[in-house]
Image (cartoon, rainbow, N blue to C red; front, side, top):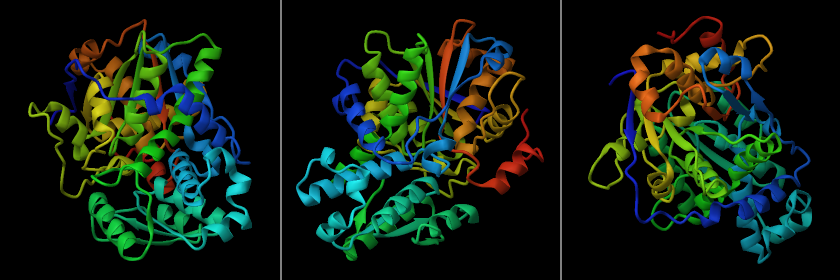
Length: 400
């Protein structure tokens, strides 16, 4: 493939229902998350000097490395899904289960022993293991081959039964689901399939807290983005944020661009096809963007992206490494953002679109210019510090 490939979305007469990802729902989700003592609104970095250098009006990057002390956004979805599961089990409304109530001995006694099960490339599993640990419950986490040891260790610190298996991410999902079904476990996964949709839907709703915070802060400053760049693995985050902003900006929706690595570009392949079917990607999925190394789109999320996203980009590894270096070494006056491979790729894409003459046609197609106000999400910090330093310090995966 080329360094970057683009697929556009055809306008749909009938669009997916996104009512469950609207501002009212997001406010309820944020109310749940704000009951956590660790809750703080994560920073929205305004990179005005970088924007000037790139030739756009402004670039805002939501920095999720500060989320709950876990260095990534994924705990938002995992905790909200677990909260809803517990509420349903106990016949309660989630509004009756703020954090302090959820972790109480009273709730644990009513709930009994539960084992929460999942597959992860790192961040989702850590968020789920942390939530289970807070509740005094157990978790079992499956991780794919090639997983960084630091990510394994961080999950193990949460008293989780975690192991790396000789399988890719999607294979680990199936292994985890088999284990949950055969051992009375609760599968908590941000992808979906026939008969497994409630928990993935709750996870998607949980991600809205991140989008809602960004929306509120931009609104406070009188800013509306013209473009939103979102990275995608299975597409749950991308679907949730796309739907949220399509709701709050219904009268003038920003251009929404979905970014995936070449080696795990199932959404791009699905958008590129003319048959209307979901197209999976198989193989090792060995991208440095570990959080995006997913080959099977989330079934409840794809219709949302198909209806409301504007473009899909499949990109080379170097856009992630370039974004990491740009964010970690800011122009004087801008805020430093420590961003991992999966978190930085969207900033890397925006930077290269504005500066690489070979990408002019794609830049023009998505409409980036001197009037553009771009919102991106750095979904993780340096969750693999060894890899972060090899890229930022030592120049691994050089830009070209």
